[in-house]
Length: 274
Image 1 (cartoon, rainbow, N blue to C red):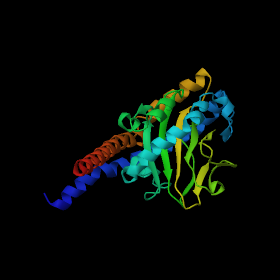
Image 2: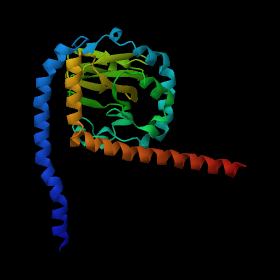
Image 3: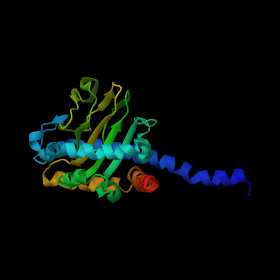
Image 4: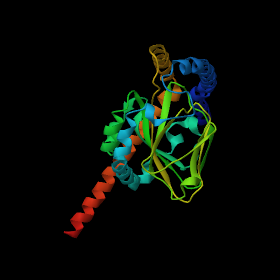
């Protein structure tokens, strides 16, 4: 068998997956549009782009512990080159994440704790464990001068929160638009928004921006909670969830290996000095 024939056969499974992936994506968008109205009516908090912190008592834990979280992410950033870009974790995000401009250090993915990553940020992880129905959490690291284009989230059944950790001095030039509202990150401050509203991000500064981003289930009546749970279970069966999960585990291995190499190098330097 020729090498050209072998390459064609190797590429065939991926070629067959593409039409199916497109159909699943179209199906998913139709379903989420239909569910949005139902979940909105089932919501126990306002259906607005940005939702007041008073609806979420657990947010106080984040503002009380933000400095310890900032120190933890600073330690993680010492190994910045081993932190993956967002599209390396989730290839479907290639449109909004390019190059190494948006890195993500994942602590929770789809409700599952990334245990070895979480060990690098014990205080952050402990506080995240107090969030009811936590879905995802990661340190979101945005390069200077980068713009994340307008996009929307998957389901109204999940809300997103941002906690400012390392924020450029020119805070007004580092911002997010959610619907028609503009939010500016500040160190130690937190806000919650509904990412099914169109949103986009600008870092028009020459400094890196780092926040803790986490998603949790929207507080809803029992019928809304049931619908959202079924929808998320179905979505987790698709490649849009399965592929990122595998990638997260791979990059967790790589980051742990980078930590071991750094520790070994430090030990060698220490031995050389004695």
